[in-house]
Image (cartoon, rainbow, N blue to C red):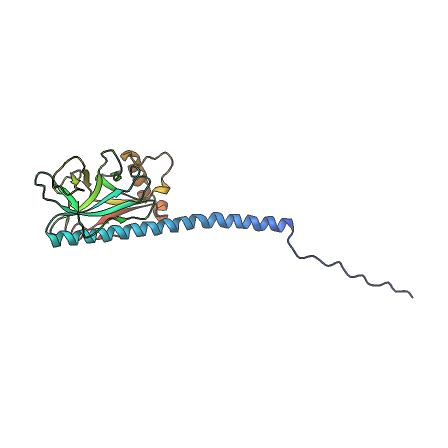
Length: 246
């Protein structure tokens, strides 16, 4: 009786089939679509938190100076370049000068300017109501007359708007001349601030337009999903202590 040799099965080469590769790629694309927005939100949240901390520290310092020196002291926010749009925001502390004809403020030499995280802007309320009016501050190199915005502390440590008018325009006396000579920038003191990531601005929104900027900020502040993603944060502060209410 003859026997036939048993043939072994051909070995299966290790690897993936085309279908398996396509499935794996599809899963990776889905995971990237889920995680990338989350990473962006975390980054925005970190920037917003750092901005809030810088605002809080600047206000605490200004309040301490006002009470120590016995003169009104302000935290002033301004853009660093490009019409308020392209550079980081800057916070400076300025103390009331000796001008008796207008409320002027000059640099407080013991504390230099502080840069805010890049892409994070600061806006201030100039008109309260159901839909407040928000404005962004002008830039250092801006040729226009867009005021910088600020928060003023009196010698008692309380925030105030000089004569009680939200739109009061004081001026920043860079050269410390104790008088206006044409080189000053107006300051608008505000009761509420907001910080937002300029990268999240929808296309077609002009930060230089109070109407468009106000519409964006008010909409985002009312949007629960936007708040969860930390696109905009209102910055309220205690008028007695100047403490930022987080």
